[in-house]
Length: 135
Image 1: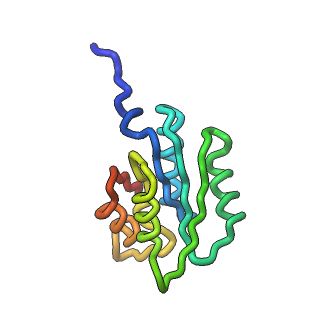
Image 2: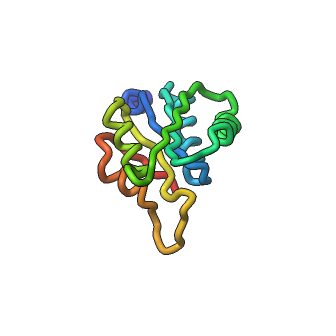
């Protein structure tokens, strides 16, 4: 039997985790935390919103991370007349180097008729890096 390899640690050095506060996005954060604990991945969490309560998001993230790993939290604000959440995530990805994006399949605007949200679909199709979608 051969020794296990940690090739994954090279594939997932820097991970971007877009969150919106939904349970799916928080499960994506849990997966990123697991990678950080196992492989030393660096996690950047972004919250993209028009008008949001920054303290609420910070508390939600801090509660979920619970001191297990180091992370960076960025809150990106935009106007829906000029952009969208998916465009802002993709713009952030194009301006920064990440090895992977981990995000929830559906966010806060869940419609039972669809299996994957428009933001997740747009990021998965257009991202220049690996995308892991968590259900």
